[in-house]
Structure formats: C-alpha cells, structure tokens
Image 1: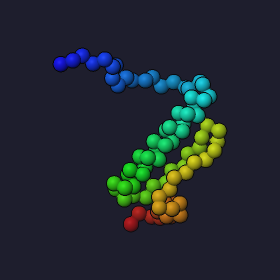
Image 2: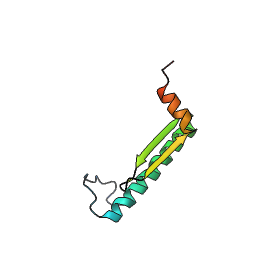
Image 3: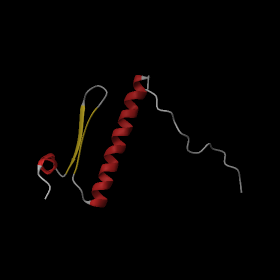
Length: 80
C-alpha cells in the first residue's frame, strides 16, 4: 500500500483569532455551515427550527423554519 502524502485530520488548538479579516471570514463560514445543517435537519426530520446569532460587529442574523411566529409559539406553548 502506498504511503500517504498528507497529514490527514489534525487537531487545531482553540485560540482567539487575532486578525480581524480572518475573524469575520470565520464567522461567515460558521454561520453558513450552521444554516446548512439546520436546513438538512429540516429536510430529513421535518422539524421547526429557529436560529438567531449576532456577528462580531453586532449585526443580527436569523434563520427560522417555517416562520418566526410558528417557532416562537411552539417554544412558549406548554408540552402536550
């Protein structure tokens, strides 16, 4: 068997991202990944999802399925 030329999956230590451009870029990538995973869960399990996150510059981003009213009503209604 041939020897691998790559290092494979490496563990990255948790550290604050100091470069501001990298920080915003990382946030955008993580936000898109979170939205994609939520969309996949909606398609696979037919669930109601609500996500609200704030960017490093305090801009709000939200994702609700099917609507914000349905998700909030479901959250505050007692379990039946």
